[in-house]
Length: 346
Image (cartoon, rainbow, N blue to C red; front, side, top):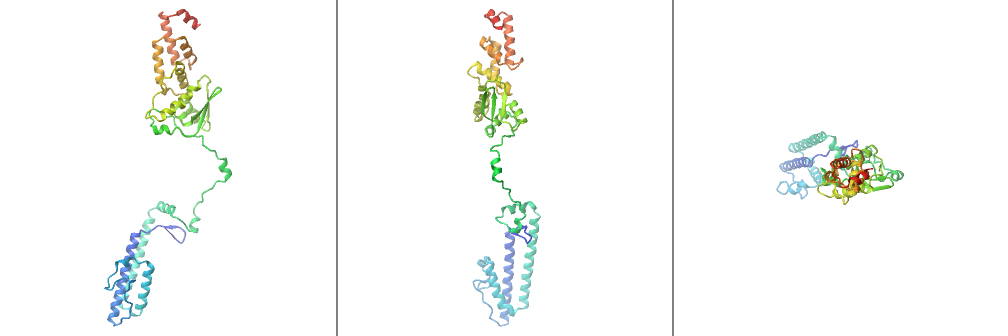
């Protein structure tokens, strides 16, 4: 791209149109020299310069195709030789050829101006994009560019190594594709404090995407990386849900609900942690199995104690169902050891 006198970038003219106009000028010059030669022959003068390899034309007077691509410097040299020998023999035909050249050059200039105007009308965006691709600019035009602000060493050292603020909506793992779930395992880590225990290594995006409680907290406290829950929640259950199980579901084609655990205690602990964290949609399979078990069977005294100690409220589903079922069985006299059961309740 060329630069104008005021330092602004001028739009480029298409090469095809420039080449076409150059060929027209060359043909006009050829007609001019041919007319001058014929005029000189009619006057009996033979001292004009004979066509050479550098002239536009061969020995037969026809234009050489290879010379059509002669560099501008060679064309300028040939025109100087021709003009020197034919200057004193200008004829009306010669002057007519000169007029044709001038008219052709004027047409080229007008055509170039029209093309430039059309390119300029293309909009400022095209000029900007071309400026950005230019390898270098003159000193006058570079003054209009905004220099890149460089940070000093103190600013770089004081900058935080990682931004703890993330924009992560509460999502549904069941409808998220695998690529979306894999992206959750990036960014800052958080720590969940449970009494004297600390569950670390949990991705903040994972917590905010799966837990409604954690999402609300970190959405209102975006700079925080710590969260505290009741010390009655099992740390192992929190780690399993937000780390172990999530790591497994990250690479699966589709998400499955949390499976049953190896013991009654672990299952109830998972259900309690899910209620405190707002992750009940992923523990429905465990809850369904325990509802059926407590509805159709008489739990052991140990199981009754586990359900009672892990209830989250008076309306806890497991606790409510178990109490209603035991009351019904006791009323119908179907308890195997009513005396021991009565003593246990007392």
